Length: 405
Image (cartoon, rainbow, N blue to C red; front, side, top):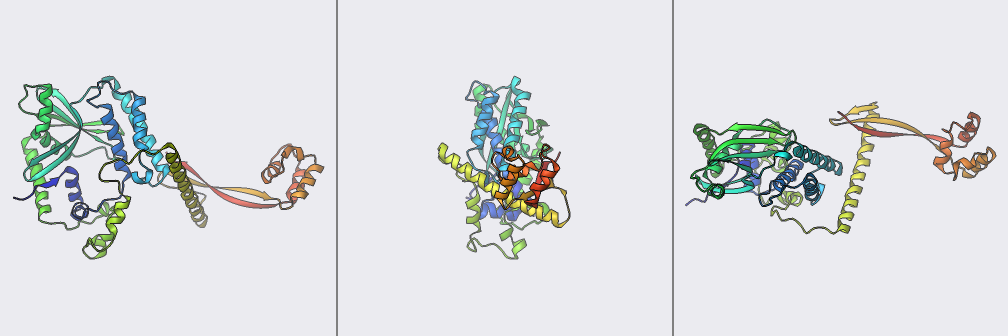
């Protein structure tokens, strides 16, 4: 008897995106690199699970939810989350706090316990072990339920295919039926009455009526066709700009290498695995406060070093092209020219300032304090000229970044 194929909506989506990518990920078992949008989505899903925890009779306050989010967020480094820098991770953190706060402002007065949150269902049907995680199931009474799926990406509008799969799972799952019967023992069968995508960044709720039998049949035939192709080993790549642009498997893809990948050909899988999160879902032991401080110091130092390197490269490129202002997607860069005086003979400077009765204004005649006298309106132009004559002027160009609207 053939073994059931382990399947999920995310696997279906990856195969449709590119069968070769599916093969790398689920046949060769090569992990993808961490993606910041997955980490961001996972963190917000955890907060929603915390808010609606059916085991907790009292809903947490906004402050408790934000505290939970912070602790969960800080449990992994920005690299393991897939962020390019500490700055980008901080932007993600602040956006998460904004979303949670806005969610509370909209819904706190009407919080109600759902039937379940983050329910993992494994359903054996049509030769598949169908694995689904249903973000939230609300009981509507009379055996009817609503399935709600949280979304955190940039795309707001979505096709309801994923909800169609969840509808099939919910109406066939003995575990979900058992949950409903604990609330309403008279129920004989489950019916999905409503389906909803909830886009957390915009607080937009997209409702769909239950799919009819024809829609479910056509959708399911498509699922079974994909499953048959996987069993038959049909993994031909489907290259395209959207598929290939951010793919982690460029280095080994036959589209780019001209040859099939062999697992023994290199250490690509090990390289990816070293940068991927632990697939066992086991969190590491909590850090001590001292270890956490040391880690943050090192991460901050690395981020500052990267910032200084990029700043020098940007200044050089802008000067080469004669630009004083240039736009990125999210930031504006401007060159700011500043002049500095250099005083080589400190003793002559001290003697001159004493004779001009300006020494007391500098407290200690350092480079910066003497230079400040040249901007002091109380110092006469003649005295400024005498001071400037003892130094040499250099010009430095600095870079200023501003967030664009």
